[in-house]
Image 1: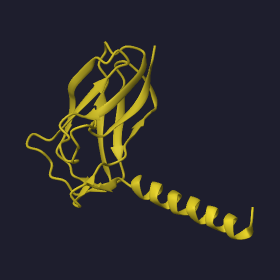
Image 2: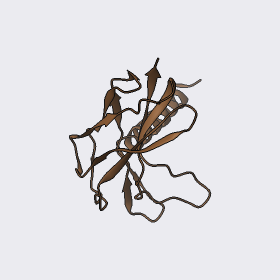
Image 3: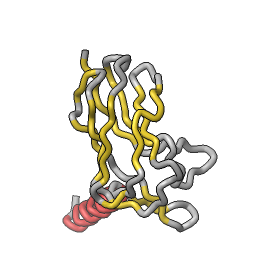
Image 4: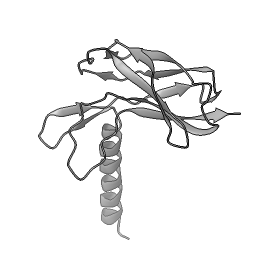
Length: 141
């Protein structure tokens, strides 16, 4: 492989890396050219027992209107059973957003997730899945 070919390959990889990391910042361009923002979240601790409390948080800023009644937080266990409205928050995504989420006592052990149930901001093509922001964690026995 020539030096010129190698240089092009490295430039292509770098360009793709920059594009991918830009998409992970929490804001992506919509098909209409407007910007949609989906914050990246964490759950702490990453392993918790049913009945414990976890913190669902993001340090991303996202300029979307808080819906009437606030953000509705849902916990879903590995059996896809959804525990709706276990917490709420009226706070905007200002770079320091967090909410304490009490885990239901009947939450099944295994993989689970915390999500915002009433997220309705990202444009979505008819043939795509458009779920709201969420983060996985593990429910221990």
